[in-house]
Amino acid sequence: MKYLAIIISLVSLQFFQIGTQNIRTSGSFTSSFQNTEIVNEVCFSKQALQEDFLQMRQTLEKNHTSLYEYTPKGLIDSLMDKNFGMIRDSMSLNEFFVLLTPIVSKIGCGHTNVWMPMSYWKQNVVAGAFTKEEQIPRGSILLEINERPISEIILEMKANYPADAMNSYFIHKAVERRFPMIYARRFGFPKEYRVLYSLPGNKTCKKKILLPATNEAVRSVVFKNFNNPDLKLTLIEDKNTAVMRIETFIYYDKVPYFTNYLDSSFNVIYEKKIDNLILDLRGNDGGDPFCAVPLFSYLEPEQLPYFAEPYGKYSEFAKPIPRAEKAFNRNLLILLDGRCFSTNGHLCALLKHHKIGKFIGTPSGASYKCNAGKNTTVVLINSRIMLYFGRSTYAAAVSGMDKTVPIIPDIHVNETYQDFLENRDVFMESAIEQINLLNR
Image 1: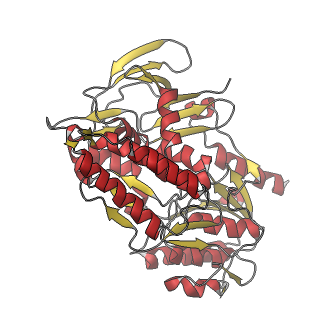
Image 2: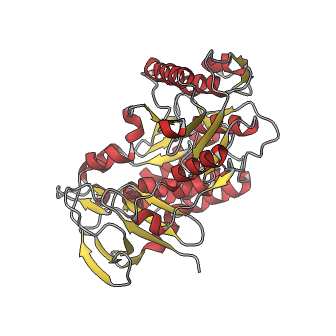
Image 3: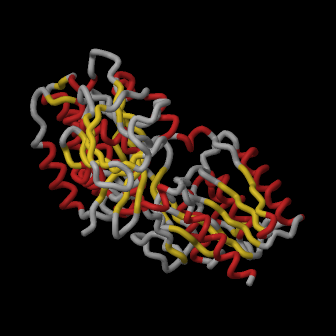
């Protein structure tokens, strides 16, 4: 029997799905309720929320680049009509939000979403083991939150989270990464969080009320990739192997920093005659093509186009990309997971299509195309809920790939509960094993 449970660690709330794969979320589960005024208790008139709903609908119908690509217009219209009819007087912000999420999740666009206004997070936040003390032993399995089974909570979250082509791997990882904030958006801020959990390695159950954390502590983990994480090159000399860890391409204002990292890293690899390169793209959910394209230039076997068509300021990327002087042409291993999204999806689709390297991990959260663009945020006039949408489509220069199918690894890796308890990096272990096989 397959089921979803939650494994609690010191810095992250871990999900474990027996028979399929395990996922993990950012932080154990707590809340902050320092202020007496709770935002989601503010109520709105029926007319105000109807105005907001119509604003959302009209914005999407007028501006979204492919609103009916994955769900027929009739079904989208029917869902919109149904949820519009469910608006009533004196609804809270949280209750209205829950009417919007089933709609955006059916569009099949990972860049289309609704987000609570910033004031919602200033008052309270659902957080995690971001406090200094460990409230629950690492490796415990969370069973209930406020008497509601965790399986029901996860099911509701996953059913209402958007992804490109409804990609289940991306949704799985998004719920893992953003569990605290998704919980707050869907269920609001109860006065306390009563959890039922079983201890690591046994079936003994315990209950506890968890302590609060701050909004800033949660956001520093959930949105880590927006903080320009350091880029590093690691050499495993006895394996003649280099490891490049690229957590994100979100270096929009630091492109020279990123390209300098690439140039210096590949210079080291070239000068030292490194035979094996492990490109670790786990957790990379996209960013600037001006970062991804230079990386591609170091990996392509010949000059190849990056984008399928000329897209505005990226028009030059539809032409063959000049190959880097010290391009890598030996054994390439790419670590991949369900957080692969957007620009990272483009890059990985190109590598897969041209048979560049070997992918190790789980299926990606993206395919070769996605929607994005400029001026893609609208604030609903009354509730101040933020609507994000894809105004333009961007596709990698590939052919014969199915837009509904993720990038499938050549070697599948599934982390087990025991792996987690032992702090094993089974993705990296699998890559090293492949290198060992080559060296025999």
